[in-house]
Structures are given as C-alpha cells and as structure tokens.
Image 1 (cartoon, rainbow, N blue to C red):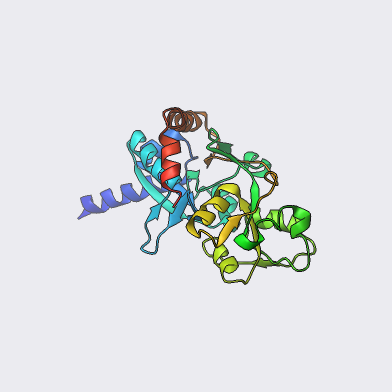
Image 2: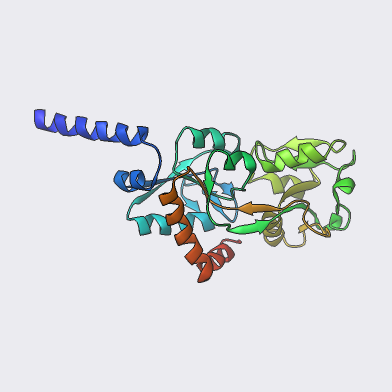
Amino acid sequence: MRRVLSVLLLATAAGTAFADDPINLDTIKGRGTLRVGTPGDYRPFAIRNDDGSYEGADIDMAKGFAGKLGVRLEIVPTEWARLQGDFDAGNFDIALGGISITPDRAAKGDFSVALLEDGKRPLVRCADKDKFTSIAAIDQPGARVVVNPGAANEAFARANFHQAPITVNPDNLTVADQIVAGKADVFVTDGIEADLYAKRYPGVLCAATVPGPFTHLTKAWYFPKDPGLKQAIDDYLGAAKSDGTWAATLDAAMK
C-alpha cells in the first residue's frame, strides 16, 4: 500500500513539475503530450464536432507533428476572446486553428512559417455581391454587419464601420447563418472563410466582388519562444509545404 501511494505521489509531483516548467521542446517530449489550444470554430482549420472530436487542416497537421515527436496529442478548448490569456497562462503548447500573426501576439510568443497569406473580404448574399464591394459601401446605416466575438473580425468591423450597425453573434460557426436568414447583410472575414461559405451555400452566399482584400494577414501556428520548438515546427511545416502535403490537407478541409 505504501509503495502504491509513493508511486501515486511521485506521479502527481511529476505532473506538477511539468505544469510549472516553461514550455519548450524538451518539456513536451518529457511530458509525452503535445497540448494544442484551439477555439475549434474556424473552418477549414479547426472545427469541434458535436461529439467533442476535432477536425480540420490544422488538426490533421498537429496529429502528424505529435506523431513525429513521439508524443500524444491533447486538444485544449479555448475561445478567441481568451486565447491570449490562456496562452500567457501556459494552458497549451501551441495555438492553432486559423491564428493570424499580429504584433501583440508576436510580442509574447513566436510563430511558425507562414501557412497562408490572406486578407479580409466580405461575405454577403449573392444578390448583394456587387453592392458591398468597399468599406465605404458597407459602412452605411442600412447595411447590417455581423461579427464573431473577441477576435480580429470584430476588431476590424469596429475600427472601420461607424454608421453600419454591428451585431455580435455568439460564435463563429453560425455567423453565416445570420446572413442566410436575412438577419444580417455582411460578414467581413478572412478570404478563405468567405470562399468556404460561398462553396457551402452555392447560389445563396457569395464573396463580394471586391477589387482586392481589405487587409493583408498571415496564418501560422503560435507558441512560446523556444528555438528548439520553433525549429521542430518549422522543419515539419516547411517540409509539408514543400512536398504539397499542407496544400492537399487544406484543400480537403474546404468542405
């Protein structure tokens, strides 16, 4: 009995030590688990299904990376509004699922090689695709803008739309439904998401015919600063980009 208790105490102590240790490649390998944080509400990168499972291009790549390290993958749920707080608290090793590189994030962590170059574009009903083609055209009292809470889409809308009413939808997964139902007119989001919803709702939703994206953004994985971890991630993702694995994975998730 004493022996069993000692083993349990040692295991608990080891777990506490790992929890308190700084996040780096050696800690992850020693722990035997790669903890990945994601909001899980952004197709095609990471989606949480009703049964609690996850899928998406970033999820598939994370599984491969965990396998390469020889550790188990653990997905840690978070939300866009508290993602940085969870990151700062060390609740996960890598944040992914459509993460954009921003100066605020870069000041506190590091980023992988770029996975996607993109920009904000409007998602609208197809009947309005030639109407809402600029920020000025959207920023009108009669244009109802919808956003998901606490992330870059809401920040963009509040910085650029001062006359158009803005509604905050509870989550990212059902934002497009508000436009389909006629409860909103415009959702300015990353171009890849606008294209995905246009594909999922053919003839109903369209990416507006803008001359070009309103912004430029880069998608990547986000993690604490550690040269070893960055090298391992960049080697893995860089190879996946070079041999076409990443492009094929992203394309398969565009559904």
